[in-house]
Length: 513
Ligand code: KIV
Ligand code: ZN
Image (cartoon, rainbow, N blue to C red; front, top):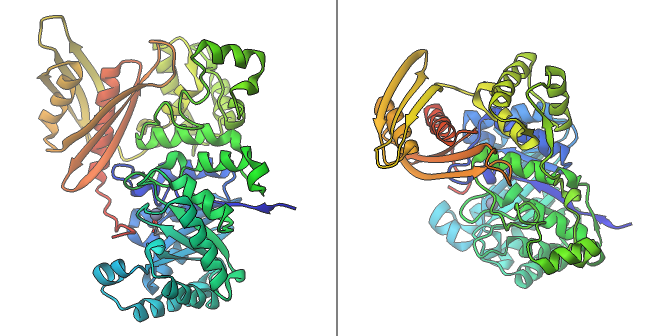
């Protein structure tokens, strides 16, 4: 029987550390449910001690998820570990993931601790974590740049204390495949009790090699867990991308010889959900989940695929969850049909009143757009008015005027708390005028870092526009996403959604801080 490769998803922890990708508790819960449908083995739900918001998110995910193990990150100290254990109390299967840096640079400059102190703290932390939880993972942060003799001593000690998984992070994305794979192999060979733990890889993508390094860690090093994120979301250049490693191991089973528990048909829905929630757009040529990943443009390729699909395709689009834009509902569809489609898409709204709010939004959309696709429904349930996220700012209406040769003008009405406001402004274009109108009343002072607009469904100007707005204020970066057939309205929604996130002001400690 082939070994099983454990897929540890850290979209909600390491992915969320990406500037602007922070998510609310409800958003995290929705993604966690999708990860469970995807059948990932472990969901790293957050870093419970980093903020009250993260604690609550881990707690909510632990009580909602039954099939996947739910994990919380914790620095190697008693307070963090106790907080993680507390947040995980309701979990069916819980894991505490504790870490401390072991590279000379991190120990000296960041921790200001001697190697012996680090070793002792690692040992005591794992000992304490094991008192609270049977499943304990240990990571030597910046492990790949650590001194091998010292690293072996630390790993031997934590396995002795009961660590069940040993994860070797390439925290700064410095590794290259062959060397990283051999590094894991060397550690497994030299640590005397290495056989008592599952070995895991965790690679960042700074040199674009996170997937290749992770696969080398498995093939050359013998690791049996990969840590990854949906769409490769993560700090700087991101983490190892789940869809790519999973499809590599599945498509090249002849080479890797490993089994996976993943339901790959849930990959594209998961990718869309993460992209729509965070506003991090997936590049069209991204492997597996990019819009062009299965599109054959050249005549020779099209001809080949029509004659025999495997001339140019090594995977089937439907196996990773691509369905051609399917018209699912229209103006005349009733509440039951809508509810059933939500179920088919695996979308669970919390209450009947949430379903009613979503249905009202759907009816509103169907009045303006004749064909409603799955993608529209997914975008619609991300809308704040449906999910009851903190809606301090809410769009009521927008009127804008633009004419060739004239300066565009916009009038926007919106609520701030319970008070209704109207604001007007000119601008270079209707979007500029609308955002300036909002800002003239709100005076947030936030700096606009990014504005992007995408069509939710491809191939038609009837599509809804999905706008992402990234704002920075006082060192915080947030993304707001808004969807509407009118891209000026979508822009105003996205701007207000970003202001709502700034308003929530959830401070958290960074894991690599
Ligand atoms: O990249 C890293 O080192 C991490 C650890 C906290 C596991 O994310
Ligand atoms: Zn990381």
